[in-house]
Structures are given as structure tokens and as C-alpha cells.
Length: 319
Image (cartoon, rainbow, N blue to C red; front, side, top):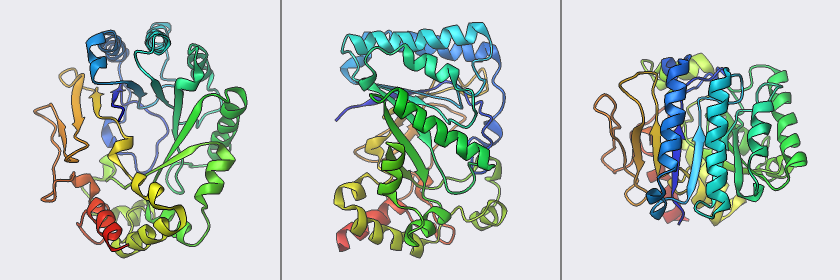
């Protein structure tokens, strides 16, 4: 199984999703911190010793391509990072590069410039997101996302696309009511689809899940409705797709996180795909693991503190 090292270069993003996990951390990142993050990433991926363990690289914002490469120095350093990854791909040192992009503004020239730096585009993934609530604030934002998804496929048919959607209460209702067809969506936008569970928005972490739902809509699902979704999903999509649901096997093994704090830079975050435990190497940050061993982020329900990973396994046992 391939192992992925992901670089969360900064936390600046202007998409303003209602459920953003960054919360108050989602703010302007000073130019000097952006340059520092980029150089740290270049230094890390230039260390060939890491490729005895990792074979996939991933670059994650915040956001890169909605005005965040806002000076010639930052843009040049970012493209240097892309070029270094291209060299690693050309020499078969890494097999894939994942590049995250929201696609919510019309001008995505920086994204297309980055794509053009990759020689073998069959090794490039562009990762984006689609949600039924909370992401597209206007019809124009949704139309812009659709436009760029089609442009990516038409202009770069070799590039692989992956879309992440959150299993909100709203998404689950639409799926169960046949208002959202997964195979139709994948075919229409030429994309894979990764479904993940809800996480408390950072700026609303002081509220209960019900209070968050009251504020932003049907975000956290009820446990019974989620379990109905799991049964239905298995029946419609099949066992292989069921196993992929919010699976850590499809997420980065190691993340290098950069907070908007000079003392919290290049912090190592590890997902253990055998135990499903998650750890972070920072005294000021911590991850709570449940008695079952899974991260507390999988307490996904508005009406229960049960673990959604455990529910997924229990339903598989029943089936």
C-alpha cells in the first residue's frame, strides 16, 4: 500500500465555507510564513531518504489558487516546489502528486500554470470538494466550480480528479431521497468521490452539535439516519465502495502542518492506518482518541457520541 506525505503549507483560505474546520485559524498568513513553509517543504522532499517509506506527495492549503500566491516571491517559490515534485515524478522516486484546489473563483491561472509544470500528467491528481450545503454561497460559485471541473477534464484528460464530500445530514437526506446519485456525479465530472464524516467547525467549537445545526443547517446527521445511509450505500454501491467510506487508507499517512504561529511550524501529524489512532507532535495541540481507539473526530452525530467508524464496522458485520 502506498504511503503519502502531505504538506499543509498554510491556513489562509477565502472560500468561507460555513463548516470550515480551521475556524479562527483560517486567516491571512504573513508572506514570510508562507515562504518559510514552502522552503521547509522543498527541503523535506529533497531528502531522498524519506522515499524508503513514502511514494506519494500532497500539497494542501488553506488555498493556493484564489489569490494566495500574491507576490512574485511566493509564486516563484511555490512553482519551485511543483518543479521539484516534477523531478521526483520523472525519476520514478514518487509515483503520484496530489494538488488541492477549491475551484471557486473564475481565475485559476496559477493552478493551470502549476499543472503545466508536470511532464507526466498521468501521475497528477487534482483534489477538490463538493458539498450540498455550506460551500457554494451563490449559484455563481457553483457554476464556477463546474466550469473548472469540465475545463480540467477537457484540457488535461490525463490528470485524475478526486472530489471530497462531507456526509452531512443534508447530503445523506439527498442520497436517500434519490436527489444525489453518486455514479451520475462521478460520470458527469469525470471524478472519483471520497466521502468523509463531519467535524465541528473551528469557529463554532463552543456550541453543541444541535446548536451548530440550528446555525448552519442540517450538518451533523442523526445516528439512525446515518445507519440507514450505511445500509443503503452498501446495497447500491457495493462492498468495495463501502470499504472506501471515510477510510484512512485514502488519506495522508503523515501531514506537515503549518499554523499561523511562528512557534507552530512544520508540525508532524501521523495517522496510524493499522490502529486508526492519530497523533500530533506539538505540545499545544492534541488529538483525543475514543475508548474504541478511533479519533474523537468520528463522533459525527448530532444526537449521539457514538463512533461512526464503529457503526460502519458493526453494520458490515450484520450484512
